[in-house]
Image (cartoon, rainbow, N blue to C red; front, side, top):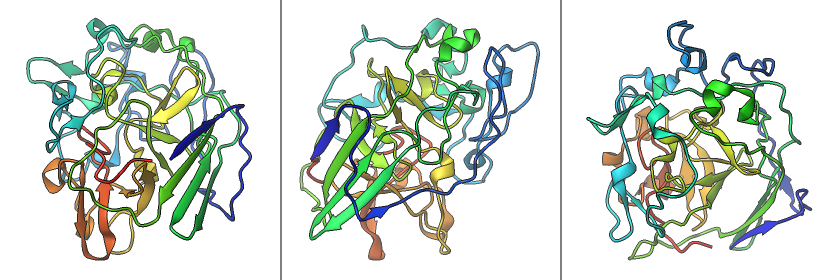
Length: 324
């Protein structure tokens, strides 16, 4: 069960409050100039390219495994409303071309000829003076029920300099005038979810929640396009839908790897199954070919679980269990 509560401040009743003690990045000033990105590292300051100050690099793009971040498969044509399949998003909602979104003619990092996009040539909203309320994350387990409450702002405090209207170059591409604000979410999930024989489609809106207190949305934007490829997000991986801050993919700073190389749990999906980070057994980066149609698999003591990938559909392709 997912409950969304207003007003913005949630009353949290839980025995365990998890505060992610991740190091804070360097915050810059507002205005129409970029600052050091805290998800990655700026790639350069080519004055011939007005977007260059907003490029960042990712550690996951520099290893020898996984897909090429310069030519990621564009997910636009991989949304389905009929049949789950590996590498696709089984969505409850079909494309809506009339929905708000980015200006396609101004996007330079998507190559329509190859149906691919370049993560390293996509701009990200930098940090700045924007400082919303502190994020919260609380988890309580009672019997077979796991209750998670958040206020949907990042516990580690890492967030971009919203609103994006301060940055005319970025705003011209994606006119998202939203400003993140606290909003109470409560997820009531089974501790021991069951794998269903028939997968369930994924809706728009919240599909899960991270340990950083921010909800996850699916890989699709309102138009049904690949949200990570098309929409401008901040250097910390999120953006608002009006006031509702959310992630469409896993910010790599949240991926904590265990001593055996396997990523730890970074959040939970609404059917109760955990979402792990980018690494599988032996520290190998996961790809769609390693996972089933719902973007998960089962092995060893981990049981069934989902994995994040840097390729579409990024977090889940469908619900393997019963969504709450």
